[in-house]
Image (cartoon, rainbow over all chains, first blue to last red; front, top):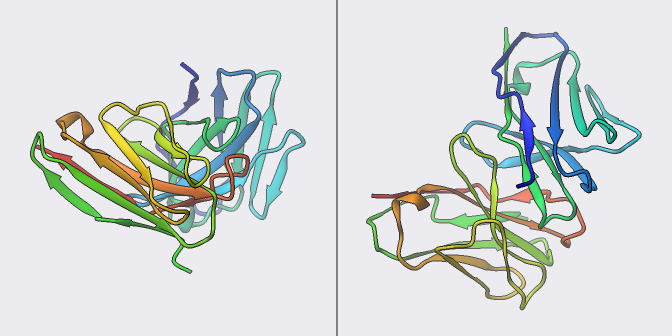
Length: 109
Length: 113
């Protein structure tokens, strides 16, 4: 079975801190990589796609290491509103996605 | 533009009862999906419809049937509910199976007693 592994956390960080999550995947043929965020009792929301060259969206930076089969998400200057569960998702097409169980982040005032 | 809508939001069934979960999207997307999310597990694909008129099994199709009624609507049916089907069900849509899965519905929380 294709696996996506994440540290479940929780990560408890103060406002303004930098926090990083890692995710490893087992299927070396994977072609698509994403981070989603999911608030408590809500639907997942696409945060960002992850590209081989790495990509940044404001305070969020995602990196992909194909050789080691891991993906990372860095959040800088954490806000209270960043508190959520972050899902690592790997696949090849939207019908072939494997979702990780998620990493819970709590940003503390 | 409502995005992806699901009904009902909550449902309690007794073992053996049947029900249909409804999903609709108003973004003219070709592809639609049904996922389930259980505590301590990642989302798992039940069925998907790559385009109107087609449906295919996902990772966990047993105990479910689907209907792609038209381009907008994709329903999930439980013919004889079992306690193992207690879960949160999410419908999702995308422009195609080759584009990111960007839009999820708000979910249906189903409990089977």
